[in-house]
Image (cartoon, rainbow, N blue to C red; front, side):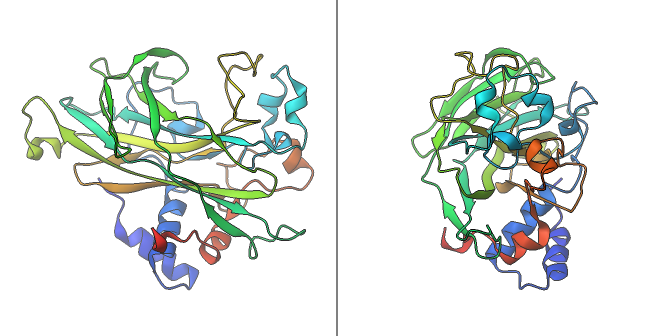
Length: 306
């Protein structure tokens, strides 16, 4: 159920780069934003694009990069101009596969690691841009949601550890689990892209053996949301008319197993891919909300240092 190593190796070979840690991580991120979901999500609607694979909605932290289906509905039009958005959260969603038959396990997740790509020249050249590793953050909330991930059901049975790990029991009623970090203050002025990774694995509960756990079919995706600023609040009505954020990007849903591994998401896509929402005024005016695969492989975050 794991991502096959041959996918990463093939991407490295295609890119004509050596497969050091940076390029391996970037290749994994490309796969996470390119391949379809590993399985059918339990009870999820089939229409949303996230039910099939990765998505890039807003992509860049600026108001005019938000998709038109969001900007048309939000009442506060002052936040949809070209000004930068300066807040961000990292989130995850976990689903059982439709065919899952094992429920006695919990999901463990590390603290997210986040990099932002900043332009360093007036032309905002990707090749001259630099990656900034953001300070350590951790998931601070998790809850069970309706199967369309639109409505809160109840807080998840979760533990938040001092080392930044989150461990949550999956819902006995097969609801998906959605959670995230507190808002992070960023300088969105010259941000060209975002790169996120989280380590995740399964742990047995109620006496289930690790051997039986290998038959569990559970998937997660990860992603990011931008906010106009760190004080922006959905619950306070700041996004009246919509009641939610457009979202920067979200990865495909991939299997989690008992063996810890990294899960990736990034604003990276093939040219003209369907995962990119192209309805925003920013794109209509000639802008681009994602990095190409080659751009990411040529200018990767410095994973080697961490």
